[in-house]
Amino acid sequence: MRALRYHGPLDLRLEHDVPEPECLPHQVKIRPSFCGICGSDLHTYLSPVIIPYKDTPHPVTGETWPVTFGHEFAGDVVEVGSDAVQGGLRVGDRVAVQPTICCNRCPPCKEGYPNCCNSLGFVGLMGWGGGMSDFVSVDARFAFKLPDNVPSDIGAMVEPLAVAWHAIDQTGIQPGGSALVMGAGPVGIAMVQCLKARQVKEIIVVEIVPERKDFAARLGATVVIDPKEQDVVAKCKELCDGQGPDAAFDCAGVAPTMKTACRAIRHRGVVVNVAFNEKEVPFQFNDLMIGEKRIYTSVSYSIEDFRDVIEALGNGLIDVKEMITRKTTLDRVVEDGILALMHEKDKHMKILVDVRA
Image (cartoon, rainbow, N blue to C red):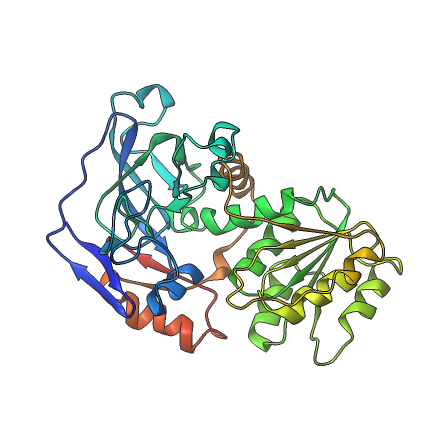
């Protein structure tokens, strides 16, 4: 079968003779239809920032390079394992895939937090195949049937939306509340969509890129602030009863955005770090101490997050069609996908791979 394989930095190869995976008893075998290209894919393409490394197997998958790419994907079930039949999935079902790799043995896994697994990994990055291939077999508990009114390209968007949904859960924010989103890239826009679906009343987005400011305004932000033109902290307090928003989400991953978020929220408010920080962030705890503000982190998602996002999509509470700015094919992932997101990031929000094209 075909599979786009990662052989190391700047070395992605579309191979045509990769063995087709078997479907183990606890698995379902899927024929991917669409797969998103994520910021993690860009980081990995440029430098080996994840395991497995070339000579270091992932502790759960046991795999080293090359590994198949693609962790944001949806597709059709083509086989159901003998132990997975009771899960309700049938051949022909369209599903979104939660690409979690976990050991099922460590304390976090046993406590019901596989996203905190001591050996956390992701299908499509650390082994066990990936969405940029003709077939992939996944744990049946991580495959979720899509409603008839949610097409498969939108199904490929469930994974990034679940990241945002999980981050919101860390805050306890209620319907009618207020939130600040730092950065209007793909994660930031997903955050806006999920906040809107959860009936958060005031959604303030901070962004400097004109195209991304437009995205935020069209897709649910109530206010968009350009920090080059306005004082973000003062504006947030003005918009939120002089106190600031209930919660803030750093989706940019740079020191100034975290600092601003901590200063902008109200007393006992919550800042959630969602972005991957490439550089160490210097931090002033006084920005939190005054007002007993709190800072949390959020990683990945849970089964419940996937279910909630799919329900919201089915009910029309989330609409991400505009986030998909291009579709490409397996043989053009680097040229039309990765390089486009690197060099035309102001133009693109989410590029999907039409795996079957």
